Length: 190
Image (tube, rainbow, N blue to C red; front, side, top):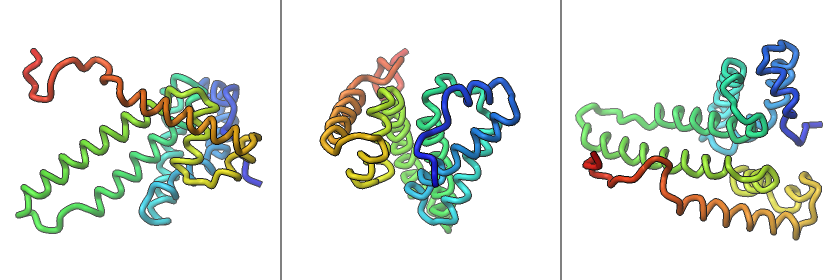
């Protein structure tokens, strides 16, 4: 049976201290979740498998960079998302080099989408764990309401209430100005 929860904070802390058994348990315990993320974000099952594997390698190499041990799921989601986007970009590269203008526009659009996706992920990462979990399961993974409620040990009404609060919090978070950004888009904010 697949474990429903991410590995606990104690395991993450032990892995960050370099305990080999904890690192192994952390990677194997994260795998089902990472794979589920990848299948929901990548274009093909093959890309999903590759993205999940790459994400676990990054987890193994960079576990020390995780600041909030409770944010493991959000951190891994961002890694998987970035890997799926990277794979999609390599597939979507223009075949003809003489279409430089179209490629530049496409690249600009891609950068804007990526920045917005990163901003949404950052806002989601700030949510309390109970709201973040229901939002990711419903809106990111696309799971139906009843299975989400059961997986979280909630009634359907309670799950819907948390989902609503999470969505409102994300909308509010996206209305806030970017941290450290006070100028306009023209670059003349010297």
